[in-house]
Image (cartoon, rainbow, N blue to C red; front, side, top):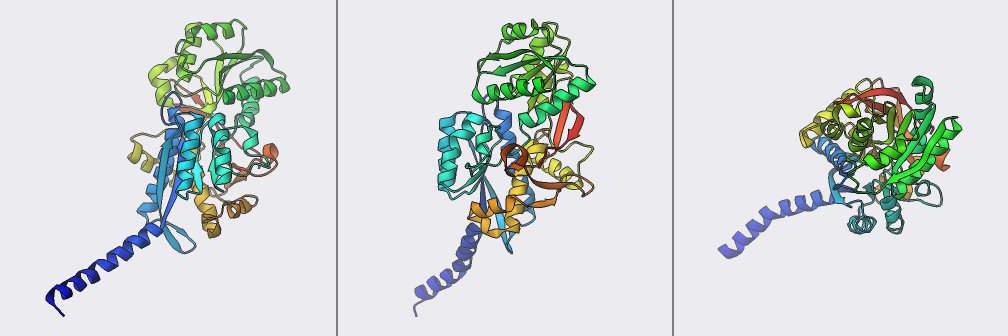
Length: 396
């Protein structure tokens, strides 16, 4: 055997284990998709989805990956910005599912979530939208799991609180002129009427991209409401609307059923957004477990600061992984995942005490459990940050 041949065989022998190791590592990667709005007025919603998934991956990967069926998987998050555009969201969903990704977090509003529904169903994949259209979650739909508390679930609870604790008797609704926000407005009006509140304005709206909210807010305030609901308001619009209301002399209370960004509120509106109520992250300081505190630290390390909304969006990937661990067949077959949803229950790792269960919910609204059962938290803005107003729960 020549020296050249001997050298070649030696090199191949040295390289072979690394090639095999590389192949094994590639085989052991679990990809999770994120398809959501990461630019524009609603960018905060999709970016928090992205950051939450990446933080969960950081935590698991630092410990060697997630164990599913006795095999360790490295988590890889593949995130795409849909720009709040249904066409882009469809393209994103096609890109993600074409990679064999079975579980996708997002999109963030009704129009984009409904647009990708056929793509998800054809690909036999499952996504976790933060959109409230009931047709996503009711049979025969089979590709969507609601990732948070819906506006029509928190609305009645919030309005009842306002009626009993704040003395609110008259209420006005103002929505962005797009389908999901308008749907939330309609549902809010219906819930308020059932509670006996006097709806003095139920159909006022403004166009996406509006920067001067004084004209529309003037119309709303002229109806003399005790309370104004900003239905489906985007994080970038909320401070401007609060500011407009206070600059016009409105003394009542203001709320929304969507999650908000305290930093944006503080920078743009400050004290003029004081008292603004919204759906909060589902992990208040009062209920945070050690695991939640570890998660917050990891999130801050990745992002630089904590966002209250992340307390809600931490749950989607954690629940996906827990179901996969219980039934490894669901790695490649979402039908196996759906079978688990009806009865799945685990101790909520992010709530202290160990008595709170993390389950799928939504049977009361959708006829089946097709919703992540996160705690219902309502926050109040104090001019700088959110403070917990109250904590509740939705029916399973």
